[in-house]
Image (cartoon, rainbow, N blue to C red; front, side, top):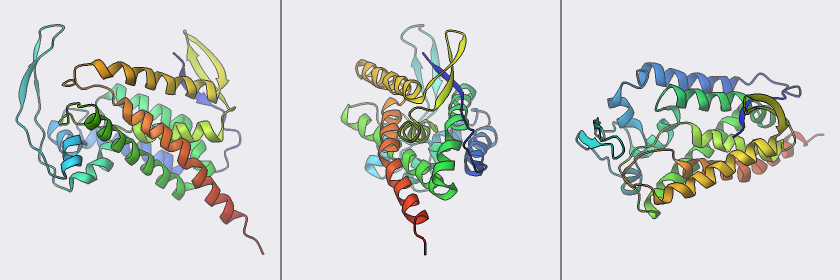
Length: 252
C-alpha cells in the first residue's frame, strides 16, 4: 500500500491559513475537549449516531459490557450521552473529533499534504465551504449505508476522514499528474496523484465491500463515509472552480 508523505507545492501562491486552522481545530478538540480520547462523555455526546439523524431524536443508552469474540476478553462500552444541541449539528461536530492519536495523526497528515493545494485553487472561503460540504455528504453517506445495509444504527461515528476524502477527490480532479511522494515497502518514491489517490480509493471500496459480511454490531472504519466524501469532492470541485474562474474573468 502506498502511504503519501508529501507533494509538489511549487505553484502555491497563498499561505493556506484555513487549512492550518482546520488542523489546529482538530488537534484542540482532541486534546482539550476529548481529553486525548479519555473524555467519553464529550465524545459520545457530539459524535454522529445514525439512529439520531434518521429519527431526529436524541438517543441515550446505558453503559454495557461486551465480550471480544476472538480473545474472550470482556470490556465496557460507554453509553450514548445526551446531546445538548440539535442532533443534526453532530454531523459537523463529529468532523473535528477522533478516536485516538493514530486516527488524528493519519487524518491531519493527509490534510496537511493535500488541503493546501485545494485552498490555493479555490481561495480560503470557498475551500472552507467545500471542506465542510464534503464532510456533511460523507457523514450522510455513512448514515444512509448503515440504514440500508441494516447495520447497528447506535454505533457513533467521528473523524475528519470524510471531509478529507472530499479534499482527496478534488485533488485527483484538479491535479491528476502532480507528483506525490509516497512510502512504499520502506522506500520513498514519487508517483502521479492519480496512482496514489486512485489506489487509496480502490482500497476504500474493497474494504467497504469486505465489511458487508462483518458483524453489524461491531464498530470500525466508516468506509461509506470515505467513499461518499471522495465522490462528493470529485463532483463538487468543478462547480467550485467554475464559479471562481467565472468571477475572476469578469473585467472592464
